Image (tube, helix red, strand yellow):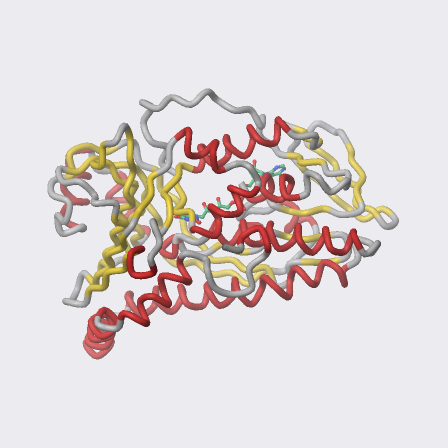
Length: 394
Ligand SMILES: Cc1cc2nc3c(=O)[nH]c(=O)nc-3n(C[C@H](O)[C@H](O)[C@H](O)COP(=O)(O)OP(=O)(O)OC[C@H]3O[C@@H](n4cnc5c(N)ncnc54)[C@H](O)[C@@H]3O)c2cc1C
């Protein structure tokens, strides 16, 4: 998703860009009746603006996307509860829940229409410096030479490993169970999040043919509990999920096949080196409770494109680490701040001692009564604050 967005942002630059990916880069015809893909992303307003300006949003809208207008968050072991609404900042929606496959296909449709180089089924296996360039070797033995490599190859980035970029990383000791479920009550276009004793449980609203009874769920829990839940049959799983969610949307009627993903936070100590830049999950992976991973990635792509285009206009050498550092300076503090906030949230809600529980429940109740503080949070979630690249500006 992030690499394709960057390639599109450079499409009219006159730069020679080659997008390579280990996958076939093919687009399947979209079936509106098809079951939901288990992997979805909550796209912020800032991501929507970037994708609109890259000519991708229409491709998402004509496939399937589910706007959500409200967010309800509560502490499962107390009485603290907080509600956010798009109406509080006069916005139409807080964001859209979109299947990752839909975002990828809409991006690929657009890429296939552009005059950009694309190399499918190109799995990178080796890379090393060769003079001022990188020499890349693919799994099928082909070699490529490039002065600048931008790694958007995800959380287990081969480029990051092969170039020896150090990371700071730790296990959340959480696994996320993801699937889609149908509930007895409509989701009310609300993203629901309950902090359970074992981790956050999110119900994200999905829409198909105007029906509002399906949700995408992300259930973060301890590895042993995840193993137990994954072993359940569908009926037992629906019952356990309904209990964990306090039945807020009534009975959980059906569930699609489940996926289980171990959660790990990673942050590259540097995003850039001579002739190298990391973007998206290759640079940082964050707990999904924030629903921010790919939103941070799209902002990385938009800022890096802006830095490269400005440097090119000034006749600067794009592979120069001094040029690339401008991207790092703009993105790293923002990404780190969000990761630290999520880490704090995660610890706060995992903590069991009575004073901490009292504090967080009192805190939630206090903030609930402070419309100004909530509006600030909503503006942040909408991606309306901070140092925005032109592609993301309202
Ligand atoms: C359970 C869960 C829920 C999430 N929910 C949200 C959410 O609500 N909102 C949100 O913003 N984010 C969410 N995220 C995070 C989001 O999914 C990621 O941030 C996003 O997928 C990262 O996109 P990317 O393009 O950087 O990397 P990826 O999507 O991982 O893409 C990497 C690309 O690199 C290619 N590649 C990899 N290795 C090689 C190689 N050696 N050679 C060639 N190509 C290669 C792959 O084929 C792929 O196309 C969630 C994550 C999880 C685990």
